[in-house]
Image (cartoon, rainbow, N blue to C red; front, side, top):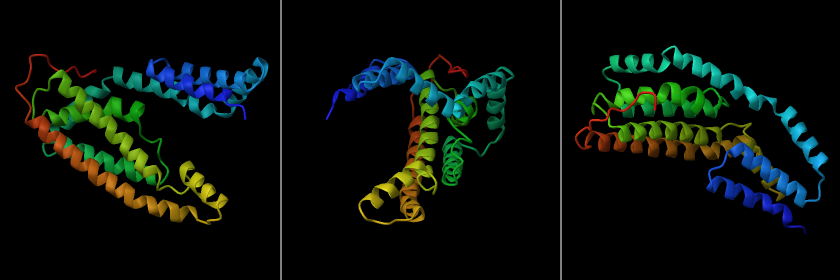
Length: 233
């Protein structure tokens, strides 16, 4: 067996450790593995071109990012801050727990791309969470605002990750079904998805508690610093 193609894994690990551009790292790893496997450069280029054409949907970010940029230039983040400030009963924990429930519920029915970091967290959820946090802890220091933004991003990750496993047509569910089928165990996707439901519920409860504890720690923080958190961070 030829183990040289595994060098691509080392390239991926080294590239991410050194914090190089992920696209360059992945493409470089593919080229290294292909060359180590004995493929010629024209064959590798043809394979890259075929993969690019067959996954054109991945280029949707090329339309998403300019759209988000135009909305932010028109004051999307500022409007979100003012809107949250007018909702007196909405706290940071209630906002993030509500978003977690919505994100997880949508992911359970396969709508995993209806929200995300680029289109929802950065332009909307992060400034809304910052504004909600300032109702009980004004004004936030820069490092506190960064923690609020990080918690908002983590909430999106957990909602998607533990919600999509419940979706019947999710790739991981089908992979599990195929793995069991190879070993003589016949399982329907519905059975696998239902077994993922307790994990999704547990993830929601655990992260909701983390959000509540996070807000309590934030409210008990020291005296606000003189450096005001910038809304565009």
